[in-house]
Structure formats: structure tokens, C-alpha cells
Length: 343
Image (tube, rainbow, N blue to C red):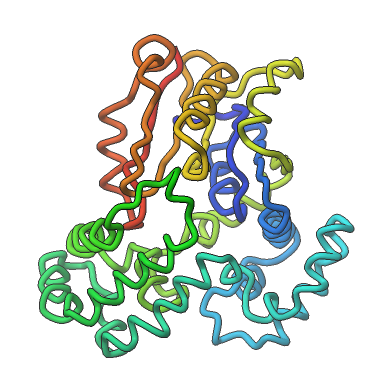
């Protein structure tokens, strides 16, 4: 997004992870919107933890190296900061003791799905010792690729990948999302990723294979110790908003507030029709300053791109950036990141 110091950024809140990571580029404000109240409550809880806890307390509470920390310790940490939460947020988390005991970064729908994949499927297909060896690899990518083909990529593991696809996609609306062979999409993507990106630098891969983060290898940016002091200093710049994306973007010009210096739509348009996807992108371009960027991504197989009537008129598609971003992809489930500059 090429965020500059002092910028004002719009993004999707989700659990707060990606939204708070934007603070590392020193924007003056990050406006983070979501339609899910539980997601916003999780984002606000994690923001409060970053603000009020030490780094070790934060990752212990969140669920990094989960089995090392007792459930009782996580409850104790929560009790130490809960008064810093908004009343509604505290009330929500007071009723979610089981999730707090387990580690809140593991309580989302897809987190549970991926964890079940690791525990019920991957561990059946593979020996735990082989998984442990594989996720520590990456110093020699050729050795990693060979190990993947010789040990990991067996028929039982391939079957587990197809089961992942089934469980991920079974509840989607196929009038919006194409009814295609997602198992093959995801399998081919995993092969590319696991043979080309060092596993010790692939936090998403570790989660899919183990159902958690050990803390020994790469973590998401907002969970990394070297970023913690910066996030603690800047987390007060977050503005969490409840709302529906398409409607909120369309109404924003009437508020009289200034345009944003960058907009991240995330993958929200996966749940929108193609017409509403196009309308959302057009609304985003209208409230983003000239020369600044809009980004989004979609599920693999999703035929959504920049609206054709906007290309080279309202936006310039950054093809080289999109291609370079693909080299950083850790997840097998997404199409390449889409990047465009507002004209």
C-alpha cells in the first residue's frame, strides 16, 4: 500500500491482526470496519492486550506456544486487563471463559477448522516427527522440496487437503462463489508454496500442520517481539467501527471527512455478488486520494478483478507489484493480491 508516515488508512478489522500490522508503517490513523461484532470484540481485546501487557504476557494470553501456558494463567492475565475494555467488550469476553483459557487467537471459525485439520487429518496422514522436522526446514530450499515430495506429499496427506477444501467451502453460497474443484486448487498451491518458501518462515504452514504457533519460527507481524514496542506506542491510533462495507463506503463522501491515503478491502467481496464487488471497488476509489493505493484479495478460483471500466481511467493496475506480492504468499487459499493506484 506504500503507507507513509501520517497517512490515514481504511481497512477491514477482522480479528485485528492485519489492521494493527498497518501501524508499523506509522500512519496517523487506521480506520478498521467490520460487520461481525465478535471479530470487533476480538480486535479490541488484542489491542488492549498490546497496550497494557508485556510482550510475554501478550503472547502467553493470545495462545502462542499454547500448551506451555495453563488455562488458569490466561484467565489471570485477562482479569488483569479486562477493566481497560469497553463495557460491551468486557461483557462479551466475560462470557467466553473457554476461549480465553484456550487462547483467543485460536477461537475463530477458520482457526478451529485449521486446527481440526491438523489434529484429525494431517496427524493421521503423517508422523508427528516428520511434521516437526518439516516445519523447521528452510535453510536449504532444495532439501525442503525433496523432503516434501518424499515424505509429506503422500496419498493420505493429499486426501486431507481435499477434506480441508470440502470443510472450507461447504457452507459458501455457490451463486456467488464458483462451484469448482477447490481441492485441486488448494493442493497445487500448497505444492508450490511448500517447495519454494522456507517452512520456518511460513507461519500459516506451521498452523496448518500443527494447529498452532510454537513461537520458535516465523509469527504474524503483530505477534513478533521486535514489533511489539512500536505497536504498543501506536495502538491508540486504531479506530474500530461496526458497519457493512458496501453501504459504509457509499455513504462516506456525505460525511464530509477527508479521503483516505490507502484502502484495504481484504477479501470481503468473496461474499458479494460480482455487481456488488464492482460497486465496492468503485466506492473505494472515490474516497481514496489520487496517487494512493487500493488492495484486495479473493479466494482461489474467484473470478473477481478490477472493474474493466475503471482500468486506466480511475485506477492504474500495478501488475509488477501484484506479481512480486505473489512471491510472499504463505496461504494456499488466495488468489494473488490485487493492487491498484487511484488516478
